[in-house]
Amino acid sequence: MRSYYILLLFSVTCILQACAQSAPQHQETKGPTTTIDSISSSPITEEITIQKSSEAIKLEKLGLVNIQELDSSIKVKLIYATPNNFTKKVLYDSLQQAYLQPDVAQMVIKAQQYIKQQHPELGIIIYDAARPVSIQRKMWNIVKGTPQNIYVSNPTKTGLHNYGAAVDLSLIDSTGVALDMGTPFDFFGPEAHIDKEDILIKEKKLTSQQVKNRKILRSAMVSAGFKALRTEWWHFNACNREEAKIRYKVID
Image (cartoon, rainbow, N blue to C red; front, side):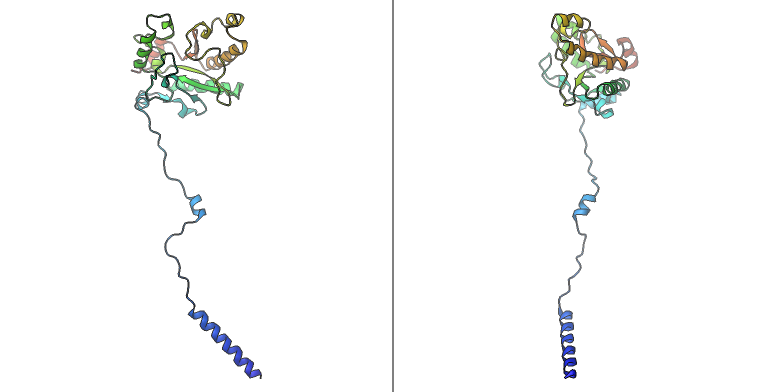
């Protein structure tokens, strides 16, 4: 009987081995395999190129700099690239960035740092910076011979915007909303002047909060070396016209 069981066990073993040898074998897949891990860890080599306008390229050739490339926390909304300005026309066909002389740009950055230290919830927004003389002529032709001509520099004399040495700007809060300065940008009238703000408060043409907002902006800009313009709360000069003519090239 024992011999019978041994013989039976031997037969079963042989049958199992034969089945294993005859079963089809999985062949190794050739070529690379892609997994979720390999996709997520693969470096992204595609470069994103921002196309610069011909006007921007021209300004860079003159040595001016795009301020947002130096400090991206400074916001820019060029009003003359829209029709929402005193001319009611789009004056900058392609320019969307704020360009300034390198040293002037550093002054604006210094003003932004001052604001962030004193009022962390606030920041600078630029409405206009370097301005070609060709655009200055268009502005002048609109106000020439009118009482508003005091608000626009005669292009034959050139203004500091035409050297990239002046900047128009305001303040925005943490949500991007511009602070109330009493008048809009580009407002031609005494309410935009800064030399009689106390009187304008008494006459109820400005509020104390509006003037306070202006003073926050002025303090930052003056601390950075700018000079305020009497007739426009938003306009600041980095130097006088004679200095600009010596230090910089005019932007045609």
